[in-house]
Image (cartoon, rainbow, N blue to C red; front, side, top):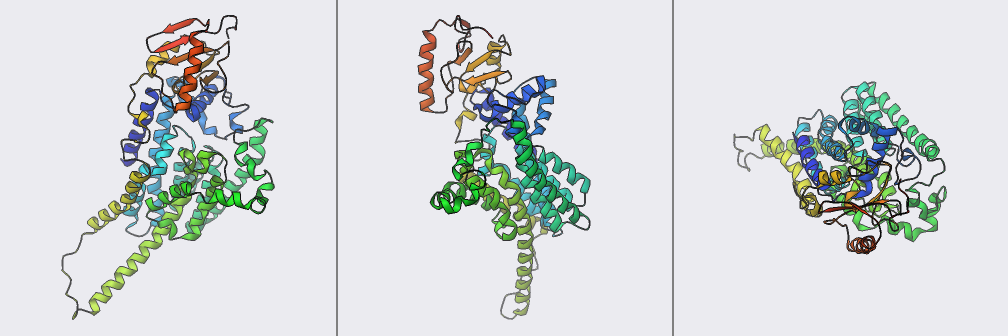
Length: 495
């Protein structure tokens, strides 16, 4: 039920943003155009990126939404539903994994439920929701299910879930590798061997995909992510960077903003990852990779970039919770023995005892409260999102937009306002009005009189472009009172 509630909440926010024409082009429009191309002509390409998309991010799982859109029609809101379902599915997947990691203790179910229930409202997870659509969100849930299957004696299910997780994105290999280590260390009987093999397969998969498969698919094209770590020197120069540019590396690693995000995730898990530091250290490799990136969103661990930390944090929380429960049980027994040995001094305890169900309920609520507090501090409480009012304040207009654009040929070059890119991304070529230079002479231009803008500078640039458009010889092909569609410049050629 909690997973369904989370799915409904996320779907309401994301579909509301698309309907209100305030979704950002990156990365929603990017993914929608790739998926449309896969479903239409089988090509993994996009006008946002040169070369094969699989050379940028190896996510063959995107064939699934491409197949769905073949049957229901191309609509970017399908991706919003997929993302909502992926975020919601993390809740039951986390519960199942944590309960398996905490067992056989009788408190396992209550603690696992409390920790899992808070995940959708983590400040970091609300940023994941704001990222609109990313297949690695599904990969996190699949990796956790692989861990549950491995810890509960289901090797075939473990391998199926692990392979599906690897298909969501290349860096999910790390999460699957961590799951393999957990099963190798905590599994029963022959499952330990399966865990070791899974960890080895995940590591080998990462090496093959990153060093061979993706470069081959790029075929010489420069990746959009190539500049993220260029400042470290590239290649083997990265290893020397801590010694040759020590001050810059230390500055990147000690910025407070990303550590605030990680601290919020840790506190939301009751600080349990700190109880098992040998498992908690598994968070450090992906975290260091994020901190050293030259990409602002990645370095600040915002939007979807916190997803890579979720599995190692939950692993260390599950094993840390197991140790914490054992320690609490021993402390309770010691206190009882101490009370019994001092009956002459201490008043005899009441014969009335707290029911186990009430104790478990208190544990569940206590485990949820830190996540709720963190949501209030780092994000907002459901169902609202005060940091991005465009989620709920704009009227739905996407269907009206699609009617205006329905007569455009799919092969036409189209330039549109920022909020219109994602709903119209199911075509060969589209770009934002304020991205790059002035719209090309052979492009159609579609603008919104009630356009959403992500910033003042962007709005000023848009205003200058519109002044030129209004004084140009471009014909107005449609005007329904809100949306205006200009044709190509006369003599500019029609696609």
